[in-house]
Image 1: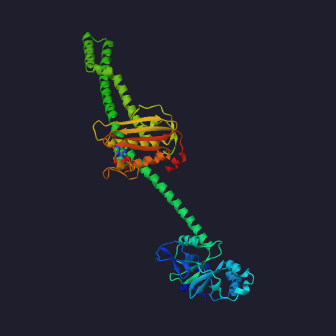
Image 2: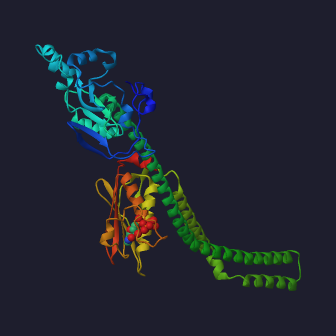
Image 3: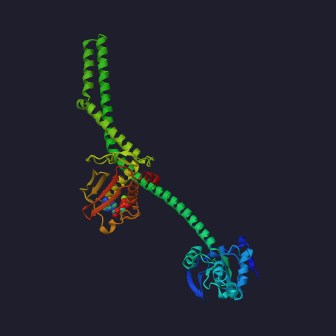
Length: 465
Ligand SMILES: Nc1ncnc2c1ncn2[C@@H]1O[C@H](COP(=O)(O)OP(=O)(O)OP(=O)(O)O)[C@@H](O)[C@H]1O
Ligand SMILES: [Mg+2]
């Protein structure tokens, strides 16, 4: 008798094949002589894993009392043609399997095998430890189970049972392998998508950290601009006042000249000359003499502001992925006592961010009035080294190994995100460089950044942004 799909058993029709969703905890147990892979857990709704049941097809099982010759004939039928073995089921439970190969080996090719065994029950020659899988087992677990139990050469298919161990149908090892391959393909696709997402969120992280740094830098620049702006303004006001006096003197001279040229009397000429003296007296002669120096200072101040604006523009440039040949000294504006170092290939905006993060950390660590941050450069055969050293509070040994971890911070809530050094680590890594820190509590901290002179992972550096 053939059970139908609606009754919960496995039909002939592939389209109606069973797909029992479950989330099993799998254990191996022994039912009489048969090792069965069973699922002991109830199904979890929403679990979309493929289960063994989805690979099962109904296959009329053999009765253990069936004569060997009848089983041989059964193998010649069209419905048995695709199968390597046929299940033997007694009272609804699988008790063995018979493979074409076994039948050939043990009966047909033996001298007088047909005569000796032909009329005997198939249970005499069947394999008593067939592959039996629970319908709700996952295909990964089934793959592991089959790998551990299948006989070599591969001559059998597997039997599928329900949770009570009742026969439901049979499945092919090749189908299982196919399903596993598809699963692996889907997993690698998922992995790739997850990797892409991670990369894009990482890049957003870098961008937001950059914006935070940019905010700090803007505040710093506004502060830096205040000084030159102050004296440029003073100088311009002084120059304006001086020019007003000069205009007065020029007007007095003009009037005196007109008086003389129009042939006025001596008294009028004297009065005009007195007017000139008065106008000249109102001018601050010293200031007037310094005017060119004042104007030079003004130009210097304006240049300083222009420099600051240029550095701000440099920092906020979005072409950060663009790698170019750079003199590291160009990246470190705060100190100029450097060794001769060769140009390096790097993404300057990114290295700029690293240096800014390190200098910011150093400045934040300094708690004394005679704080000092020193920056040194050095070149080896393949690397340019930048050392940033401070005499701040230092880093406790137990923290030192975590400082490059994302979100590790010792700063109070709201004051540090703990991303600064993680970003530095990532950027330097992408450049094929190294960053490390040494520190003594109460004495200070030194970060050393080593950047390769020739970009080694230039492509990665570009991708990461
Ligand atoms: N120069 C330094 N001196 C002392 N401690 C430091 C120094 N640089 C880093 N640290 C320690 O490393 C931790 C992590 O630094 P990181 O730059 O990653 O984050 P943060 O400075 O705390 O926060 P954020 O940079 O996001 O503002 C800091 O909280 C601090 O404890
Ligand atoms: Mg920081």
